[in-house]
Length: 341
Image (cartoon, rainbow, N blue to C red):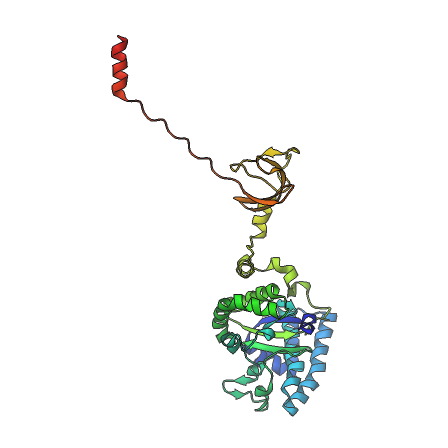
């Protein structure tokens, strides 16, 4: 799987009708639709020229694939072009080194049953579209090739059960990806995020590989990568992180927890579980000696580096309520008064 690490797999949220009734006619020569698509992608200047050139160069290759009923060629031409256009229309999830293509069919039969060949987009119901050869849809592979190409499709109607199966298989899928030498946490986080977005938007999901790596006109914020994971919902990162034994907190909460206190005393302060501390603060522990706070885990826990080792200590505990004194016996009081007389 060393080769796979060199590829960039992208996941696109899209409308199936957009391929059948917009992109396909544009690919077959409808210039009016080509202009509408480029305007929708906010293409201008060099970007317009590059995308228009993509249509011009892909069109004859697509026609050859249709005539030869070559499913592999269809993947490398029309479906690859569709992925590139989609990346200009809306952000795509990009994973370096892994994708739906690497989900093992034998180990995950239910999950893979929802990942269809992109050939289904060349069909309406059980029949090929009028302008498509009848045998072509069944000849399009269901996985990405090792060259720029389109890959698997999760249809709109299958997104919800796909997501449900994905969540049930997350621990095993993490093991499978790790065993294959793939970036497991990155792949699972981004696949999960894409599936959730597709479900929320009532859309389909489309995979491609290396379709816009060299596209210098693609907006920078249209590539959602592991390196920019702060753009992903915290709930998604938390769900995926738990599979790998990590607890994810929101950036805002982490900032609040790690915010330095102004005018912090330079000398170590005596440690007390009732007090609260911040990163960089020095404390004096009666058993471990002097240490420095290296990380605030949450409002109740922090990590402190001592001379010998790092410890997790508690903080911010409420002090125990003092015991109320028992009321004196009233009869004893009266006896004392009588004796005093």
